[in-house]
Length: 77
Image 1 (cartoon, one colour):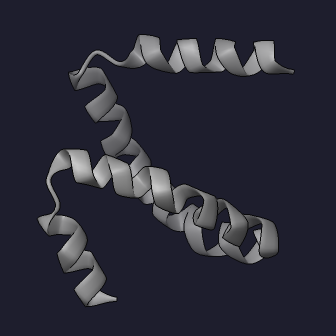
Image 2: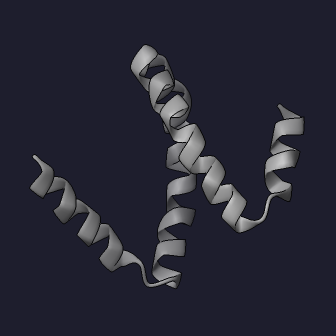
């Protein structure tokens, strides 16, 4: 696991985005396979990271993007 973390950290920002795009289907498959376990494992980490994420959103003036994403989600239903 440590080797994967090191290799990811060494990627440039564009390659990190490309990696995220390619790995996301696998991540969602993990949620689908065992949603209770994924929530149990991931929620504490998400809660720990959320304040940092929200601060970053404010610093980069991305609050409007979150509103836009919510609006887009409502129109898909």
